[in-house]
Length: 284
Image 1 (cartoon, rainbow, N blue to C red):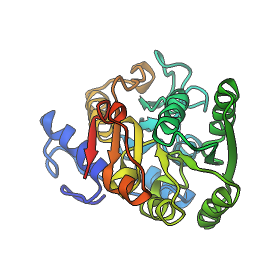
Image 2: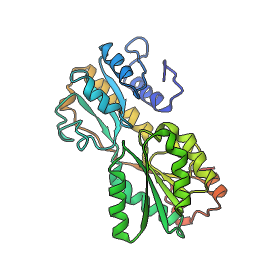
Image 3: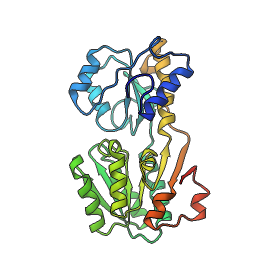
C-alpha cells in the first residue's frame, strides 16, 4: 500500500483517480498507509493529524475511526451499511465526519443466492459464512431462503483461526455450495478462502471479485476498484473545502458477474450458456 506505485490494486485505483484529478504524488499529496486491525494503528494515524482518511468498509476499521476522531474527514470505500451501522445520519446528508461510498452488500444477498442455485442446480443445502463484522448476512439470507423453500446452513466464524474448520463444518453438514461475504475476517484472506473451497470441492459465490482473482469460482457485486477510484473525488472535494457532512453517500450503480472457468472445471461444473451470457467477465 506504500508509495506512488503500490502493489495493492485498490490503492493503485485510488491514486489513479487522484492523478486524473490533477494531483501529483509527492508534490500535491502523500499517503500514510496503516493497517486497521489494531486500535494502536488507528490512534497513530489520527495522531498524525492527516487531512483526510480513506478507509476500507470491511472489518472494524470504520468503527475504530468513529471512536478515534470526530474531526478528521473519513472517506469510506464500500461501507456495507453506513446508515445502519451508525456512521452517517442518512445517505443524502451524512451529518458528521464520514462520507464516501456504500457497497449495497445485503441488498444483493438474494441475487447471489439465486445465481448460486443456477450455477449448482443440484445442491440442496447452501452454507452461509458470516462473522461479527457481517452479522446481518445470516438473517437476511435465511429470510430469503425461507421465502423460496431453500435449505440454508449458518456457519459462523468468530476468529480467523476458525476459517479452515468452517469449511470442514459446511462440507460435513452436507452443504453443496457456499455464500462468502467480503467481511473483515475473510476479505483479507482471499487466497486461503479460495484454496479451502477448492480443497473441500465447494462451489462458492463471493461478494467481490478479488476472491475470484485468487482462484474462487464466481462473484457478483460492485467493482471495488471503481469504488476506490471514486474515493478520489471525495478527497478532492474535501481538500477544496467541502464538509463531509454535506457530501451525499454514493451507491454503486453497476454490478459485475465474474466467473473463473478454471475453478469451474476443477470442481466438475459446467456453466450453463444462460449464465455465461450474463457474465461481465470469464477468467480462463
